[in-house]
Length: 383
Image 1 (spheres, rainbow, N blue to C red):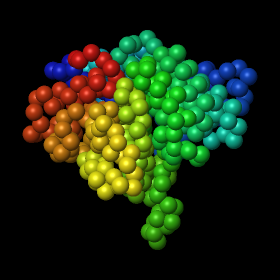
Image 2 (cartoon, one colour):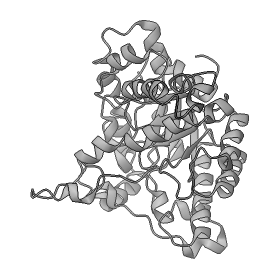
Image 3 (cartoon, rainbow, N blue to C red):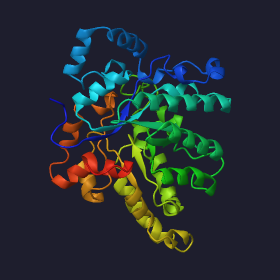
Image 4 (cartoon, rainbow, N blue to C red):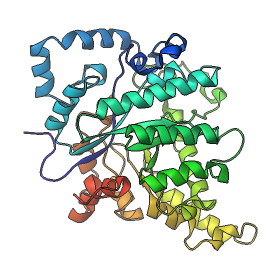
């Protein structure tokens, strides 16, 4: 009996847990010696031990049976299908999810910080080839490629290459580019190509720098780690600021007319929470009223900025956020179910955590949450 049953479940967030030699298998030969090692500092103190143990258990039938019996109990590299694509298909059977977006976890640490942009591009190309390959054997697995913004021509080229590979969605970085806005016409090649292909862009945690000033962590108290024990990964103050960058990114997309120029463009904010979404919509209404004289373009479009967000963007709440209240404030068409499998943040019972906050949500609204909104984001036929 699968964990989830009784309706269609589309999972908007899951991950692979890369092994140390995974990315190297997809790097162009002439660049292999320039790609760095896998950096696991954000995974906690025992990450390297967990990787070794996970590799060893693949040849242990008893360990495999134990994982199958409690598919949501093990996390990270220890989880069923964390790094093996055939195991991942079996995990989906046991989870009962009919579709699943799949993101990488740590592989970008091997190239994103490199000073040579050609090395960064080669690593990025390898990452996107690898994630598509992981998902290629099972149509339920939908690969998410990664395209950093900053150089419009390179971003457009990587979007095209990733679409050719077969990526189902494109994660873009949501930091502010150094030179000009992601809404500048120079980026129309990115947004227009995605709209033309019917492939959404997504924002994801990790796609922007944590913007809490270091001084705010120097508070005279004992230093803290993140809740996984992984050093300066994500702490309470970082969590408070987590929505700032995506909120501004998406507001600019609406206010600067990108969604108007490309009505077929769809996007989502994944693993960034959703408690901030009602406030974003209210602020967009205030912007439209308060700045109509000094910024006439805000009122020159057929829809208001808020209406573009409501028409073209979706959001994943964290387990434990008040999903019912958010639906009550924003309507049933904006939120997506996600498990974050096999990351521990998804908890051992994501359905139970969400259902506990949805007592007054109607049946049709629940169907929107668990599958209908995902189908709209991904351009799928209704479940």
